[in-house]
Length: 335
Image 1 (cartoon, one colour):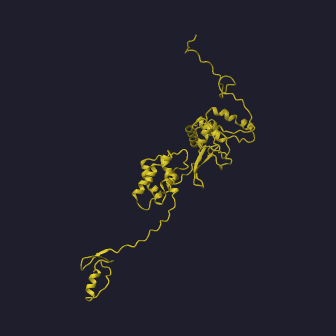
Image 2: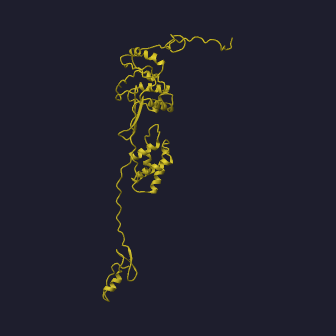
Image 3: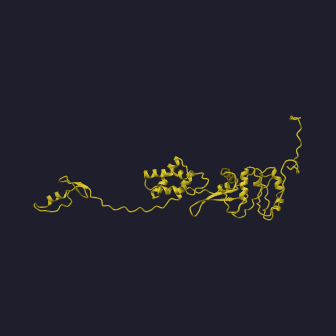
């Protein structure tokens, strides 16, 4: 009796047409509750998304429930939930790829690089940040991105929207099957700034600049540069040293307030070398030193004497040829 009978007829399924069980057998049965405060309206395009992971869907729902101005960076979310920074960072990248999230970097008036995060309650909609987005243009056709099991939820959406209260938005028409949500427009990346160059070639200063770039990982382990990056960025760092910047000040400017996570350390160093280049200071005037008159050989006695132009006679030879015998005079430039 305990042996499995492979020829036995399979028992009848309790699932009826439409994917429902009528309250018996497998499947979920909802015990509904009408929320009157502290609730968030989430669309089925997110809750039943076929290509988002459950972690990404949960992070999206949490972000959607937060007020404007709440911190949703990787560290803040990792401190709030048991998932680590790696899983949360992967979930944020999924939301970016499907148009639910856009992150752009801007420079604050203080000079610090800050990340501006915008969450779209429905990808493909247009509206100003902090305001209400406009509804997307409905597409004709059957099906949606969640498959057959999404039809029952879409059919029950009007009743759920009426039950949610006056704050709930209008019911969105299901999108066309096989069509991915249209992502938000990607921000235009600014062109990289031209790298500064030293005005005078100095091998010693260039070696000191390369040594300062190699030592950045001692202050910030994320700034691990390759040897090719060091050779490419050393002239720009030498331009800082040429303007009187000490190496420790250069390292502080390149390692302070780093973005998290840092994906391209060489690009960040190149940007800061160009954008934060200090102003050139006027060089102190050099003390004026009188150049001595060069030495020349006398054409008469071949003795060395000082004269501004070559070819001539020393003072003694000129006196012997111009003065009468017995006249005493003072030598004027004789050696």
